[in-house]
Length: 284
Image (tube, rainbow, N blue to C red; front, side, top):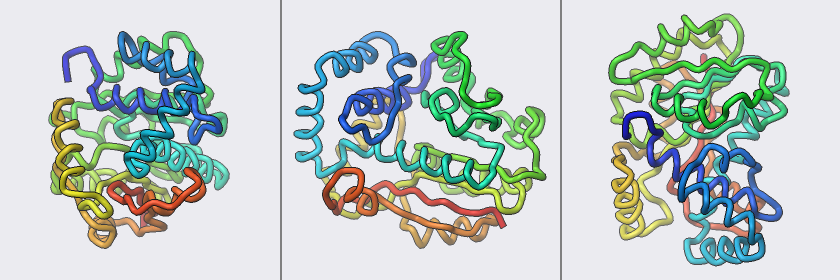
């Protein structure tokens, strides 16, 4: 990361969400992605909106060539948006976005009306995001920004000081982060969060498998792309290993699904590609 700017991966993900917003029908609806971008990234998303037929043709071709990989960010966004909707329908009033990046769920999901949202991220990413949002009012009842340098600051102390209640159920989303962390940091974070979450709270995590349904070339290519953004893949594991990790840190898996589970409904066809998955667990 450059001082005062969000991570490049956060910007790339926002670009992909912004372009996918112009699909018809859109898998995930993110009209604010373009507002959170600057320069060439913003121009690219605006161009996608200006020529919808060309954009749809481009996305369809890219989807066919990549075996569905090009749509993963929009699929991931949609699945986690649905996790939020389900939790809100179940009465959850606290939502924590751990590593919120440049997503704007608190500003674009009407289901968050009346809920309190905590956005946890690096202060530089948050400063950029808040400047881009300006005075735009969130749809959520309240939003708390919790700036955390994960190498220096105590996450539990920062969340507690910001008013997070440990006596009511919380939904916590950990999206697009754990693949960049070593296993010991993931375990430490899960244990740190445990006493802050009331029993029955839910935790949704996106994570990477070892590469099922992909070639060694594809995995190397993804590593090169991420490396160009200044990041490094540090963690991959299988669903059984993730379930064991969650179990030993105090959580029970509700479900664990991947691209093959969502592609028929969201993409209109099956796919074998299953590198990234989402697991939803309950705090025991």
